[in-house]
Every structure is written in structure tokens, then in C-alpha cells.
Length: 357
Image (cartoon, rainbow, N blue to C red; front, side, top):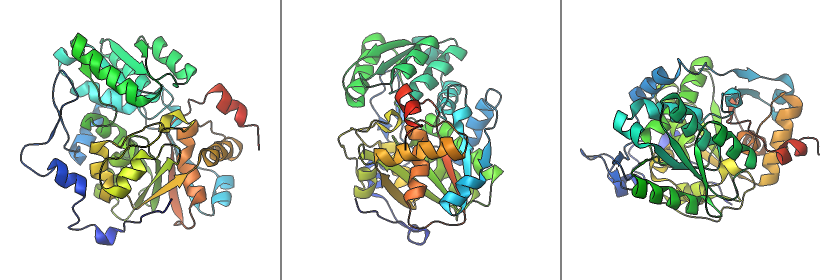
């Protein structure tokens, strides 16, 4: 697939088509109507929102490491800083989003119970936050969700509903349950508080390493990449944010390239990247915010997971290795680069695969 490059020089004055369609700059924010128990603003979080999210979660989550490894630097041909979100209590960065969201919900929203759809890491995030706040959580997972992640969600006390072959059917079922039972529906991609929580990864990283010239970010829904762009704009405007997605689930890439929401077959074996549709809120930010978008195949992601294991002593699930796969595929890059290891919830098959090749 061709890659489109957006340089910092052509951003001023550029109005992304999705911004115009949703009227992001109007006095009254656009409303996303899928949440049954209350409207959600599609206005992206501000830097101040992200700082408030950091305040809400940092008494529960320590700052994650940002380390470099000589062998990885030598392989990539540059200094590579790995942000280790695989060290989170749920094994992935998405726990930040659940905690940030729960801190903004009213007692009535929490008492109604939370319902969402996920292939695993977002599910664990919502289940983890709900348990800490004394709320119930119902998670709808597609039939393809990894068994280990589903088991982890149940151990966190959530009710699990298995429905449909892909996330598209799971999301529809979660919305149906919200309407039927009066629960608070949590959209996995179009919830500003979740993006604010995910953005705290980059608030930490650009405080730890303000000299970074580029950050490679894996993209499923795009919530993490959107958060990265917002933080970059405030703390390190010359740092390039580069998105990475599997060519077996390219909906976010196609949406970014077209400037409108697109759907695509979701055939990737890496569950954390398994989205079949672009999400409006993240796309409204990354449309002009990404410097580049790299498409990799599932085999390249698996290769990157093996690199993490062999030269950086790091266990990464597929989505957690995608950023490194994008860096290793890139034909050029600056001297100081970060990759986000977004999760370490590798399946048994993924762990077995680390010994191959």
C-alpha cells in the first residue's frame, strides 16, 4: 500500500475532512449517540484534560520504564527507546484509559454498571477500573478473542459475553445490552476520557526523553496515537508521530488516507490490532497529526516480537510489537526514536513462536 506523508510544514490552516464533517470547532460539541445512558462529546481531550487524567491515575500506576538496549540500537541503526507499557498491572497501556474514564464518571453512571466491547486489553482496563470503583462491568468479546485475555477479564470480576466473529458484532451487542439494561456504554475508541488516559503514556515519555525525534505508535482504534499527537503538540512539536498498523486490519490507515471513516476486513491474528472500522474521534486528531503511517504484515509483527524477546529481554504481544515492526520496516528514520511496547499479554501460540526463526 502507498504511504502518505504529512509534514509539519503543511499542517497550519489544514482542515481535515473529518473535522469539517463533525464541526469540531463549533461552540457546541458534536455528540456521539451510541452511548445509551448519556451523550459523549466528540471533542478531543485537551492537554489540560490529559494532565488531569495523569493526576487521577498516577496514585494507582507508577511511571513505566523507558529503556534503551545496545543490541536493539545496533539492529535498528539508531537509538531506540522502548516505553514498557507491558509492565502495567493488566499487562497493557489501556489500563490508563479505564482508570481515567472511571475518575470522570458520576456515581449514577458507575451504579448503572459499565458495558463495552473488546478483544482483551480494553476489556481488562474497564474491568480493572470498575472493580476499583465498586462498579459492575460487562464485557462483550468476539469469538476470536484470545482465551487468556478472556480468562483475565473474568478474574477481574467482569461478566463476559461472547458474541459474533469480529469486533463489529461485539460492539453492536454491547450497545444493545446498554439499551436493554440501562448500563453505561463505553465506546472503545470514541471516548475522550479514555484518549486522555492513553495520552499519559506520552506525557511520561516526553518528560523522560524530551529529545526524541520520532515516536512509533501501534494503531488499532487510534486512541493511543491521538493522545500522542496532542501531547507532542504541547511538549515536543518537532517530534514526528508515526502510526503502524497491520495490513490484515487496515481500517484506521484507510480512514486516515481517505479523510473519512472507512471499514475493512479484519483478518489479523494480532488481536490488539483487530478493528474493522475507523473511529471518528481518534481520526479527527491523527488525520493531520501523524507524520507518517506505516503498514506492516502480521509476519513482520511476529518477527518484531522475536526481536524484542531476543535482544531487549521483553515479552510483547502482537500489538505490543507492531511499533517496532514499523521502525524496522522504515526506509529512513532520525537518530533518537521511541517505540511503544503497548502490551505483553502474549498468547500461548505467540510465546511458542518466539523460539522460531
